[in-house]
Amino acid sequence: MEMKDFLLSRFDKEYDAVVIGAGIGGLMAGCELAYEGKRTLILEQHNLAGGFATSFVRGRYEFEATLHEILDVGTKKQSYDVRKTLDRLGVKYEFEAVPEAYVLIVPEEDINVCVPFGINEFIECMEKESPGVKKEVTRYMELCKEMYEAINYMVDQEMKGKLPNIITVKRKYPNFIKYSHMTIEEVEKEFELPNRIKSILHAYWCYQGPSVDALTFLLWGYMLYGYIYTGAYIPANRSHALSTAIAERTKELGGQIEYNCKVEKIHVENNKVIAVELKDGTYIKTKCVLSNAHPELVYGKMITPITSAPEFSVKKTNAEVNTCSSIAIYLGLDANPEDLGIKYYEYFITNTMDTRKIYDSLFTLNPEGFLSAICLDNAIPGATGEGRCQLTISWLVFGDIFKDVLIEDYEDLKTRFGEEMIDIFEKITGAKIRDHIEEVEMVTPITWNRYTGAYKGQVFGHEQTPWNSAVVRLAAEKFENKKEVSGLYFVGGCSQSTHGYTPIIRLTRLTTNKAIRYMGGSK
Image 1 (cartoon, one colour):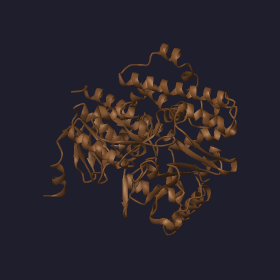
Image 2 (cartoon, one colour):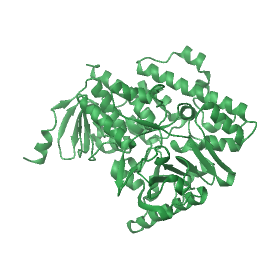
Image 3 (cartoon, helix red, strand yellow):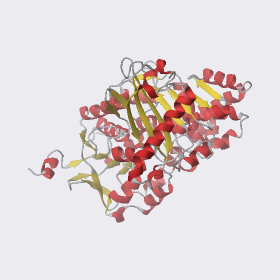
Image 4 (cartoon, one colour):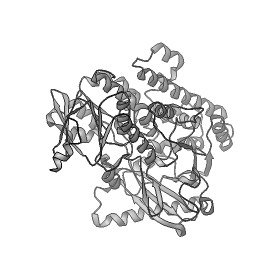
């Protein structure tokens, strides 16, 4: 039997929907579709599920690949949308709470603060750091709360297939409309907040990528309030266990997942999806494709014939700004974290909280050095094993910085980055880790691209600027749908619901609902 015939034997002649990519977005899309009774096929080019939501093993250490924390989870008694979504689908999983929001250390600004969860506790922490700011910080967090609640209201209406009631929005969330076109920096001009407090408030900027003079306040308010209010959680057995649980539930619901299957083409006829084609030429009929692959790849290489790629979609994709990638070093350490001086779960360490300066430096081989470091064992004691722990140190960069690096210089450059990250962490925290390194691994944008297929190795989706925020995308959807390929949808980081574990888990349903309506409704 030829390979092509063997592959054909695994597939039905036609599927209601084909999902390209088994990253967390593709998995959630497949699970939602299978839950609604659709004949669903997920095709993944790698040999396992998860994409960025995975782990890997070096020696006796299993490292969490990317996840830092998820908001909107809560406990079984007080659950929020992420937990509710997974429970509704029947996904079996366990989450553990992260003990504190973050530790921010900025030596040049004399900042070394451990920020707690809980709105009141958060405000009191700011007051302690800068006496007299309690009233303004309280007002700031009230505004963030309004953004959080307004977005949840709009999502809830969208889930029900309804338009938001404009009277309700104006009455309950007047600032949602007022600030919808503004950046964090623009909104904060209306608050009397000292620079020290702004620096501490802005620590989460790295979870989005754009600097505070570009990032939309709508998303920022939602994210900041959501983390502080609902807390942060991580899967008990790393994000790969969560990905696997979603994959297994998808199959239980009747969905099909096939690995080592790279989709090369999306066939379009009369502006409608008709099939996908694998690298080996296998042709699979479907009228609906949900792509976890980047729009640049879809419109630039996959749409067949290429003339079927709508001019509007191509121009829109070119206009959207891609977010950054990252460099990370994973360290397996042969001692408990407390013995090494690693006291907390997540550290943010930087020479400056001028996010514009940091952002501009991400395009160079000498980034400013905003480090994020997580020690899994300080959130889940003993997660790595008795008498040892794991520490991951990373910083953001744009994937293009490696385009002119020669092959013979690549390893030396990685080593330079790794040495610098370890030096900074030890110097700033006082932790002693070099003599306890048992395993070490490093990744760059090139690594991310190679193993996940992510465009330029980017770890997020498109930048959430005011003109292109998730809310604006939803508002423009009806107009845009008329100009795009019928039956083609995007899930994951480049979807309308934006990037990050939380939005992807809870909001992929928005996209699958549209796909289901296109298919003629649920069974």
